[in-house]
Length: 131
Image (cartoon, rainbow, N blue to C red):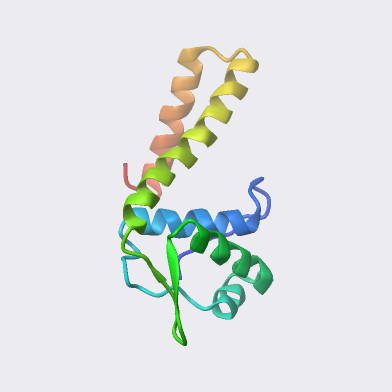
């Protein structure tokens, strides 16, 4: 599909899957009515335990992002894009606050922090990322 899993980034693998599906829905890569890969298929693709994918899918169902279609699989709900856009901002804000708090605790000057942010954005944009 379109996921990348990084076991070393400090976020649980099931949570990485959950976030990436939400981000895909928020950006329109996955649209309402579209089906996600089966648990086994995604587990095989990501080389993770099927229970990990099942846990992520369960969380997405409880968040009303995915719904089960009997005998077919899990599909993106109609309300998912709005929810996922809201969640995407919240999740990114939480991570950003954590990084900013760490920078503040380390007594990094605002100017130095801004230089770091600008340099990283430039680096990311150089690799084909947008914005």
